[in-house]
Length: 420
Image (cartoon, rainbow, N blue to C red):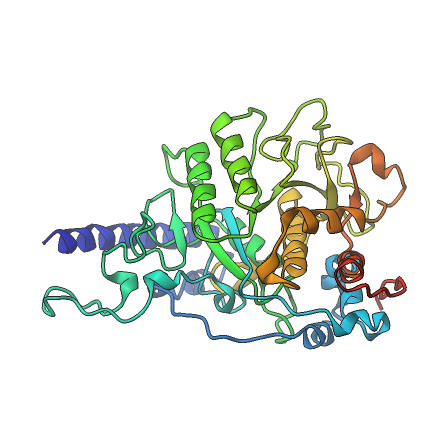
């Protein structure tokens, strides 16, 4: 009886969220697109298990070689992504591995459209909450899978959390009704070499969807939800946390959560903020907490210049990455552009996941952070050290440095592939 009540309440919550998705989607749909908005709303139920598809490094690079569509790939070119896989860096390339599903990246954001064709194969799956299940009373429920049985099968404190958790509605369906979280997830891990025209920095990595914010819900508590999401990521095996939110007021409970993540070996990649200010003078949290597991990220334009809207700081901002007009995934199988330090942060997270994938079982956030910062480049116009601790994200250089220190292999620096 208790389980039936839980399922009834859960079903009602799902329907309410679904109604909200439709309402928000229709309200934001362009003319002529209304009939397509969230057409797969029935998939708000439990997403299917992703197939185990691998994208090796050379295939990934080959599928995104500069062509007539190179303009949309300028962020990948600017961060030295193509350098990482070009044969010109032999013998380094012989050691570079593709992104690993064993690396789990927790995206603490507005949720994720885990049904998106570019993302569904890379969504983290809680193995303790999936699999065949037979109820004691076969007539009591139609559910035959752990993901819908109303039981906390893995005893982690969350019922049916097969792909993550929605801390706003307190349900195991972290679906994105806003778009921001899906966009971030796409930058990190959207599929590559499939003709869609976009690629994440680290396809095939596992994305854990943790929803802490919904702009359409009254009475939400972003701080409490953020802390809960970080704690969930810690408890459920994430190696990297991507976080785009923040504010001017420090919060001890948030700082403690990020610190605890570091103690558990988790890298925390955070946006520096979009106020165009110096974080050395006016800190932006959580990016400005003085913790060694944090990478604080500023944003750049296509010319590798710091965006006027980006926060910066010689002591409090670590590095910068592309953040202007970034093309990525959006809910309802769509694509679109967004700008800001959120997008820049996702590029750094993807790069960290790629480095971590070289030795998934021996992940060390301090080493990954060090490789990223020490391999960074200068911003256009110089004065890099005036704006940040290190410099601009350079994935190819970071991999070269990693290969050299891991295997004693060195390779010459490679000029960036030029746009046609």
